[in-house]
Length: 204
Image (cartoon, rainbow, N blue to C red; front, side, top):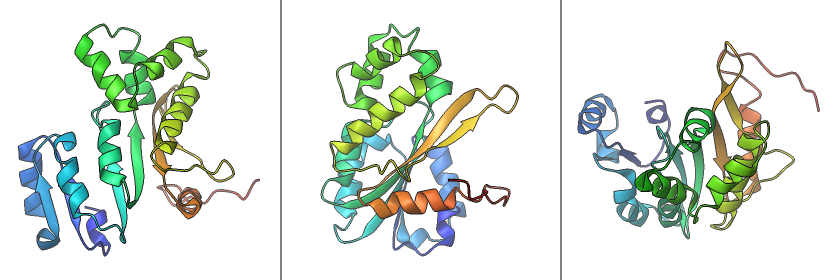
C-alpha cells in the first residue's frame, strides 16, 4: 500500500493466500497498473521476469514468513535486468529455531533452495559460534547474491536489524541487494531517519 503512493509504472503483487490477494485487489488504488498472483512466488518467476523491462529500474520486496523464496527464483527474476531487492531474512525467528532441529527432508530442501546450495548454508550455521552465527549466515547469503550480479560496498552496506525489545535478541534482518553501488548508498541514507522520525547522529 505504501508502494502505491509512488509512481511505479507497474506492480506485481504475489501471495499464496487467495483471500489476501482478493482483499488487496479491492484496496489497491492502481488496479490498472497492477497484476495480482494468488500463487507461490516461485511459480510465477518466469512470468513476472518476462514482464520486466531490461531498461527499467525495478524493486523487489520479499517479505517471506520463513524461507519460501528460492535462490533460483531470484536469478530468474533479475537476470539481465536492473532489479534492486529488499529481502527479509528470518535470522532469529527461523534459522536459529528451525535449523537445529530440522530432520525432515522437505524442510532441509527448502533451506538449501533458499541459499541455492547443497547444504553449505546449514553447515555454516552448525559450525559458527552462536555470537557470530547470524552475521556469518547473512554474509554467506550476500556472497551467494554476488554470483548473480549483486554487489555490496562494505563502506556503506548496512542491514536493518529488528530485535526483541525486551531482551534485544535479533529476530530478523532486512538487507538491500543492488547491482549498483548507488543502491547501497541510498539504503544507507534512508536508515539515518528511523520510523519515528528520529535522525541518526553523524558519527563515523
